[in-house]
Structure formats: structure tokens, C-alpha cells
Length: 297
Image (cartoon, rainbow, N blue to C red):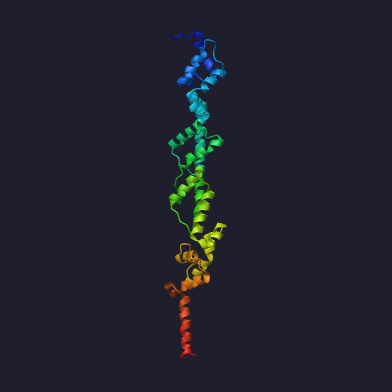
């Protein structure tokens, strides 16, 4: 039979709980804590000291299974009041600010859920900021703008640079590639430099003759410029219409063809016969033949 708890003990529970740094409603919400507290205030040889209560608490499964961030947030939520509301609001503001920075799109429900994790998982600790970045990276997506669907924030800035590098090296990727790249960088799984090096390696592999120059930092566009100029002049095409997508330019570079050889190859194409150069050349040849036969003076 359990002995009746003395009236003095029942009256002093709140005061005793506060002396241990806990509120009664906190203690009673976890059975293990309630059991320890009951023993602490009714010990036959005197009530537990604060140190002993804390030592007993630290030995519970509840304490061992939940880290310091969880315990702190859980305690604050159980106590509630204005302080907890302020913590929640500040956490949500921090999450929303970080989301805008990286380019994540959050619904109100997602923002509230991440704010709760922010408190319970200690994302405000600089050493754990990567957890927030990882969570937000999954919410990066294309958002509507006046220019169409685009990535925003840091994700947008990074992928704009990556697209420019890909274009300058004659490489093409779909939107899913750039979205995946942005998420990987935002989560910390990879860095911007990792993707930039990968594009450089792909370009060097595609144009092995120029691998050393590409690996040294030159773009395929820079290396292709003389070929595009020869093509424009020989085929009488607008310089603005000659890009790295041009099959003749790409083939010449991939084969390591010299500029003179490239020009001769272009002049053997049927399309060259439609140029003014070809017409002038034919006229010149015809004139010389006629002179040889004395048909003209």
C-alpha cells in the first residue's frame, strides 16, 4: 500500500519543480519525469537536491533519446505563452528569409512545418545551418516571372552562370538538369565549382584537340571564333547566325582541321556555289578560258 503523501509535500510541489528549473505541467507530460519528480519530493531521507534530480533525469530514456535542441524546444512549447509564440514567429521569419535567399518556394503550411523543425532540430546553431539548407533545397523550383518560369535567388544566379558556361562550350541541358544542379549545390551535396569543372571536362572530351586550352580556362566559343569567322566569310553568312551549333564548325574543331583546310572543305559544298565568291570565281575562270582561245582580247 502506497503511503499517503504529506500535505506539506503536495503544497510545495510547484515551488520544488521551479527549483529544479521545470514547470509542473512539463513534468507531468512525460511519465518518466513525473515518476522521478514524485520520488524526488517524497524521498524518505529528504527531498532530492537539484543536482540529484538532474542526474536522475539525464538517466531517463526520454532524455537520452532527445537531444538538447529538442529538449529546449519541447520545454518552451510545454510552458507556452508569449515567449514560445515569439520563438515560433522568429523561426518562421528565419525560414522564409533563407527560402527567398536560396530560391525555395514554400506554402504557409510548409513554412510553419519547417519553422517547427528549425526550433526542434536547432537549425539556428551555425554548426547545424546545413540542415536548414538541405531541407530548403528540396523546395527549390521554377517560379513564374515576367520572363517565364525561372529559378530565383541563389539558385537562379548559379544556374544562369552555368547556362552561360554551357552555351560558351557548345553544351546543352534541359531544365531538369539545372534544377537538379541548383538543389545539389543548395543542399551542400556538391559545389558550384564541381559543376563548372564537370562542364569543362565535357567540353574537353568533345573537342580533344583543344583539351589543354579548355582545361586551362578557354571556352570553346573563344577557340571556335576563327572557324566561325572563316565560315561567315566563305559562305557569306551573317556572323550573328554562325554559332557553335553549326555542324561544319563543330566537325572541323572535333577533327582538329586547320583553317585553310576548313575553308577548302566549305568551297566543296554545293551551298558555296550560290555565293557571290563562287560566281566571281566561275566568271574569272570563264574569262581566262576565253582569252586562251582568243575569243576575247
